[in-house]
Amino acid sequence: MARLVVLGGGVSGHTAATFAAKWLGSQHEVVVVTPNAKWNWIPSNIWVGVGQMTKEEVTFDLAPVYAKAGITYHQAKAVSINPEGGESTDKPFVTIEYTSADKAGQSETIEYDYIVNATGPKLNFGATPGLGEGSNLGEHTVSVCTADHAVHASEKFAEAIEKMKGGTRQKFLIGTGHGMCTCQGAAFEYIFNIENEIRKAGVRDMADMKWISNESFLGDFGMGGLHMKVGGYVVSSKLFAESLYAERNIEWLIGAHVNKVESGKIHYELLDGSMGEEEFDFSMLIPPFAGVGLKAYDKAGEDITATVFAPNGFMKVDANYAAGSYENWKASDWPRTYQNPTYKNMFAAGIAFAPPHLISKPMSSPNGTPINPTPPRTGMPSGIIGKAVAHSVCDLMTKGESAHLHEASMAEMGAACVASAGKGVFTGTAAAMTVYPVVPDFEKYPGTGRDTEYTFGEIGLAGHWIKHILHFLFIYKAKLNPGWTLIPE
Image (cartoon, rainbow, N blue to C red; front, side):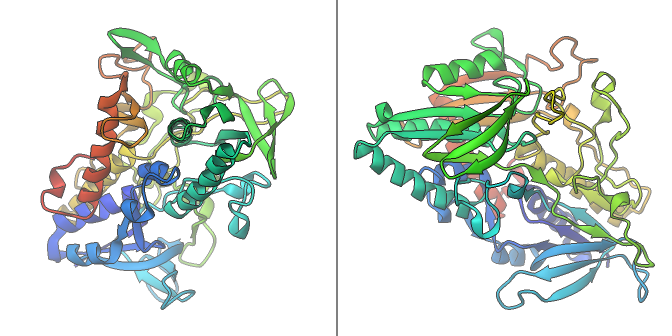
């Protein structure tokens, strides 16, 4: 019997572990190590953050689901990996530290035959002074990155609504909290939900709203922007996004690196090198992402973290990390199998893999400050990659080391994004976009880098319904309810 250890129980890790358990059956062991007791459908945290859903509606307990699947579950965080074994064993192992109440702080080592790193990101609030970290999280701004964060955001938002009803004008500042953030889509969706709820409450005239982002233009989304079909015409995402903001009377400040947050005020630097300040009463700023800080050691106990992980803490995979300058970048630089090049029994999935480079054009201010979105790898791509990696590992375990590895390049992968505002069945709207491929391929699709037949957008109630359907569908799937394997990633 061989053992697969999956580090992380988010979208990618949960997908990899549950499919692996199904495909391997009882002949092999699947182990999940994740610090969380609950699974969270993160896209719906947006609705929790405006009081339209509860934490319980977007989370569920992992233990009974893993028990049903025959998966060994440790509520713990991975601390280090020894891919060559150690002094007392030739088997590779991972060291974990328990986060569950009954074992909190206790350490253990788990040997493995294969390992999938799906730890996701560290929410690097500390990269921006004052954005909040540890006990100071939420001191000046709020977050919707976790269900608990979103509950706190909802409480602060409700307070702002009451102030406006009482005659006190409020300024809302939503966007990215650092020059190298990703996940603009989450903030994009949140600002439109905020605007929708303020309008529903009858106090839109008491609110000033502003978007702040590290994008060099609206609609970049960390993908270098896109051209898509809207109503039969091909338009840029810049025009698409600007029309959304203008129609809802939301101002924008782009090409901005937030370098400090204080009570009611942020300090920023723009791409032109100028500095500025912006005041707020309510602010939600997405933090930058980093690797979770896993260490790696060889058999002699020497630190080989730099061999296994990139400087940002994400795991190296089969990508071209020597592509060089922007002019040399190609779609083929992106990983296909997510196998670590040094240790062939190690894979990374979802946000945990190190991208070869940005997707958007790199930008920096005259002061040398990088101000550009980093590549998005959340949601649909994470699930697709998790399933492909699981398939590869299962084939390696059952067919031997010569088994074919399955591929899921983001340069050959489509993705859908539905940014919904409102939650009513017959009220609300959504900006729905599909993009193919996620990483543009200018050799295959000259000019736009993408296939405009499969890259399109629309605004309306239909996309709003899709968002609702996806919420229930993916929670149903993650709980491994009957027919779960038929629901696509």
